[in-house]
Image (cartoon, rainbow, N blue to C red):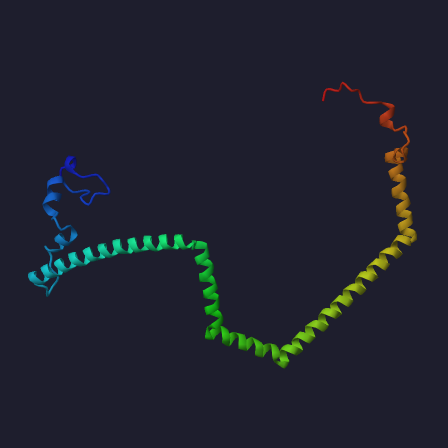
Length: 201
């Protein structure tokens, strides 16, 4: 095949075919015309021609129906606009109608009845009562534990060991911070040898 005559347009139905050969193979009827060269088994030439003719008519009808449908949709949109119906209002109406349909459906009614029966059952009432008592006991236990911990921390703070530790921390703080903590100017080692203001950093 001569590469100079090849159709390199990838969107073309003739891609990869030589110019003259492609035109010879293509008929005016498009893909339907190409199917005329190979007949399915058991189909005569006359039957195939009738089917091709009917296919062309059906495709024309489909295109006409598409155009009519498009025109009807435009007309419906214009009527809705004139009536003040927006897509948001339609969505709300659809959701409301859908929810009403769900509420009146047999499955929903059956599930609601089942849940009501469960809520009225003795097992449910006993379980609810047990959980309520467990919650009350847990709350009481946590309160008792909290009180015990607070009391224990208070006892620790009043113990001799803690007071000794507190005194040591206070002395250490006084040594590090000095009397400045009280608003006085202390003689700290850094103030005895002040840092020069013209430091290189």
